[in-house]
Length: 412
Image (tube, rainbow, N blue to C red; front, side):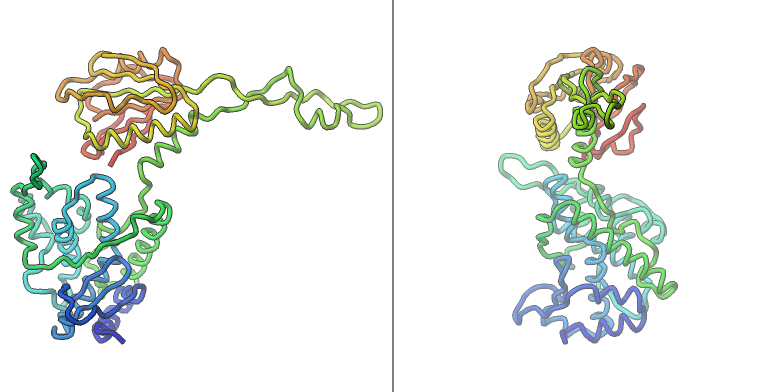
């Protein structure tokens, strides 16, 4: 027994399937004297402070349902993952965005009560982005990462001073001022990406099944856009694509017999000889990667450092040579680099100019690469299509740009 036992029973009574999601997680009582909010979670365990017992039952149910959806939607883990991708993430702003989505999903239920002044998705959209739309449509369009990116307009830090809120961040902070942060620190950042993806898939399936099982009585207003999705880190996707293209493929050699032919000494029996079977030899040509950098765009320094480190590791493992082509509407410089030294950290981005990928691709093609990666915002024509595969690596701000050919990889 714990402080939320009655509230969980009430949830399961009204919504057996979606309320039963609470049974997939641990519930514990926080110590006496803990100044935490009535309920909080680290993504696995929901803890209930002594103040939880003093709440009326409908509000207790509201807190339990709220924390249950935080766990099911993996909000604490996604805060960690977002920090890994973009660096600085304000915990209060993220928690308010997550609360707004959860409260909007629960707002239609009459058998529970949310805390007074709890932020909702429709409130945040109107106050920060001047978007007026039905809550059902909002839940189908907005996930917590997209909402956070849209409202986080904090100014960059300078001279050792912390970042200051812009107009949108200040409004969100004011809306969430009366709500304590209920997302506790999550240590899942140490898990392997494959394990995180599996956990996200499990919770997404549980949510979908529970929502379908309860039908009109579901705790969820709609199948929300915020459902946890398995995410393959762009580093791994880049590693797989380039490793395949740079792998040394064996070739047929008619001057050498195969091992099986040698093992049988070319004989199938007394007086009979086997037909000649050619062997396989490794290619002697050193694989080569072309990296094309569009310096007219704007690439964040931290993102560039991660991208360079990944390329250096890939070329070092594959023992691949590298040709670096830097330019915008024309080629600015071309350099050949040894494996493990891309030279990307030395590239300066001018920003704001025009781009034409045609001369850049033609210059890279002259070096006969096995695969090419273009670091760009995809704003420019490409009138030359090489025979080798091309990966267009674009920042998250240009995730919806359309590549002229090849594959797009979003660096988020």
